[in-house]
Picture 1 (cartoon, rainbow, N blue to C red):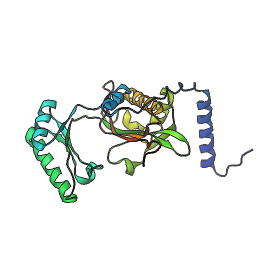
Picture 2: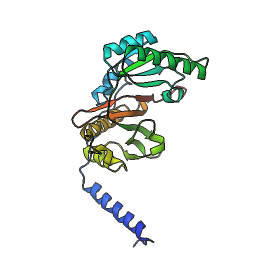
Picture 3: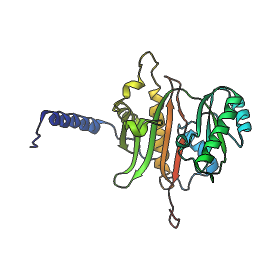
Picture 4: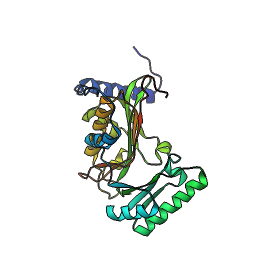
Length: 261
């Protein structure tokens, strides 16, 4: 017979006991997909991500500010522009992101400014170009999968964007997951109310968020021997029935035997 000291601790224990009983009654998640025999090729990676629900916004690479302006006009305004450089892995920290640009001249000027800022930050920085993307409106979320050294493959979901480290509103679960587990993770977040009708704003497409989480779970499970970590931040969750958009996907390959990590 356990002894619990204090009413708050008792209520927390009872709540967790109810959750545990609910989990035991839930159907077992579907079996893991077959493990892929080889690593995904770089050329096929975007298609593989899209196949699992990680659909990117319309985008194009440009080699110069002038080309970025032309690419933006072809995509349609408004757009976002991000610098592409090995020295700008965290683009916002070096001023390498510009949002809500509404014409070609604004795109050109923004690309020139971010290139100058990066050079001022690191004179030896190399600039590979500029990524031009359509602006996607919605709620910024984060979803990610990785191999935990103690527990194995896990998934995290939370509120994303640049404030993710400050907010720390994240739910974590072992893989694989199904619709029920994904929904429980989403609605266990402290800010889950933001996904519903909030201050006159239309509710978010939680069905698309759930499906994207399941797709990422299946992708990582199938390619675990080849992939160490996948993080989508932000995943823009649009209004109900409008889907979700993987704006920024960071994938880390797993070091193979004989390779230097």
